[in-house]
Length: 230
Length: 230
DNA sequence: TAGTGTGAATTTCTTCACAGCG
DNA sequence: CGCTGTGAAGAAATTCACACTA
Image 1 (cartoon, protein in one colour):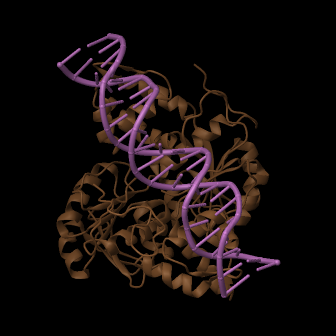
Image 2 (cartoon, rainbow over the protein chains, first blue to last red):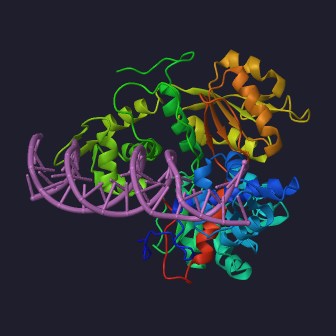
Image 3 (cartoon, each protein chain N blue to C red):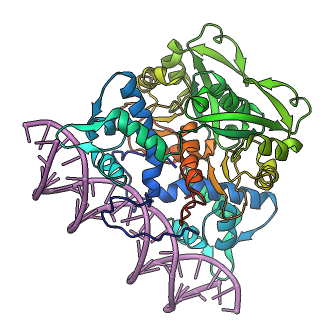
């Protein structure tokens, strides 16, 4: 499914940025923004690493995929690097998004300031419940899910967020795809089936807790909980 | 996905289960639950893989870390495997949790049925705002964040969820750790510093969108096309 | 001198392919 | 036969360590 047509060598240019690196770029971006707010002009890989919660070698390696943007003995120019990463991430313009499912999570997402701050504009909200349709949230009126195709076309939406219950997710995903959405962020605790050319990322809140639970259960020390033994 | 899980002291005996495998166990669990609800007694690695959104070889390899639980020519016993994974994940008992930060996200989390369904009990809610303290959410009264230590001790809480704004996250994390929390799920868009023996996983909603943005920006234009879902 | 950039080594994860068992 | 379980191969990601340079 992934046509990787590039090889690994210290390539200065070219766009085969490892997936793991891509997933860290937003962290660097966030850190750089903070540094800029503090008025700092340069930053070392070490400092940036600390702020982003990774290690310095990783920062340098990650940034090297774009070419040489640092200055030896000094570090990286905060503003320059910021702009560069933002451009790499496609955040030089706002992305209009639609959120489907206005339950607790959908409402929280609609009100979440972090999206708008970071380049995403909630252009439309949809739900299936007549109780919710017509009400306003964060300055956007909730539309009937049947309006999806129309809204997506009208606002040129490419990114959809699914915050519906699991049983409704597949239907909504299909509607989104039919309407022209090509990237989906799925919060519903279920796998959605879409064509290969649609990007899907999933976030399952309970899954994250379950992973914590795994390690928590096995920690040697600590005050205790009943350990499940066969 | 994001989230680096720092190594902790004292991993137990035997071959430890790869982190990547652990992160998939909840997906298998979810799929098995569905199969059980449908009344199916056995499942092949192929079918399970499809439901969980991974490939069959991975399923078999993952499950093999626990020993041999399948039957050749038949598949895996749904109920048995379900119980086994649940035990591995430490979900044979409920985990009492505390959520800090009762903004939109915190409220959504507190009301989110998925937690309770999957072994997590919201035992306490805290916030700093006098407006919110004393009000009830999902059957739990919101307490003053100063009560954290008391609540954690009272309910024997080991898992904390941070849903505060970024600027408050570090302080809350520290309070949680001081109170005895040893695992933290951090939704605040910032890195929190805690002792090495505290487990932290982070979920940053905007980061997920930014990753989508990266791939979305590059679709069509280039030769290569990359799926964003691991 | 402080700190980048990067080959190379290492570790971790994924996929293959097939032996072996019910 | 059908499907698991798993060594071995392959790919990806991480880390090391140091040459190099502003």
